[in-house]
Amino acid sequence: MLAIMPDKQKFADREALTGPIEETQSFAPKFGADGLLPAAVTDVQNGQLLMLAYMNADALAKTIATGEAWYWSRSRGALWRKGATSGNTQRVVEIRTDCDQDTIELAVEQTGPACHTERRSCFYRVVEPDGDAVKLVIKE
Image 1: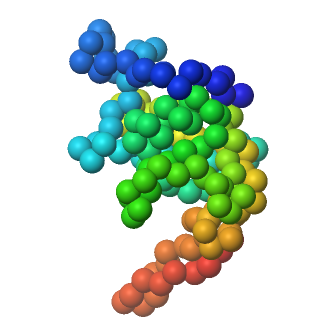
Image 2 (image 1 turned 45 degrees about the vertical axis):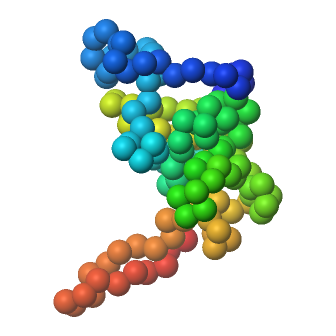
C-alpha cells in the first residue's frame, strides 16, 4: 500500500545525484520538456494495463500525498482526480519508476471502468493487418 506523504513532498534534484540514475534510491522523476511524465496505470490484482495518462509535478505530488490518482489533462490544461465526476476512482497501491525515471507505473485498485467509454481498460482494440490496410478489432 502506498504510504501517504505530506503535500509538500519534494523530489530529488537529478543534477545533485551521485552515481547512475539506474541505481539511485532517490526519487528524481524526469519530466519532459512539456513538464509531463507518462504514467502507465495497471490493475494491482492482475497487472492489466488500464490506461496511459500524464502527470505534472503537482499531480504526482498529490497522488503521493493522498493515495488517489491525480493526472494532468492535456486537453483541458488542468489537474484532475480520476473519478471526481464519474465515481470511477483509482486507489494507488504502488508507484514504480522505470530505469531512467522518465515514466512511472501506478498499480491501482480500480473502482468501475477505467476508460471514459465505460470499458475496464482503454486498451480494448487490437491492431491487425487487413490485406493492404490495417484494421482495429475490439477485444475486451
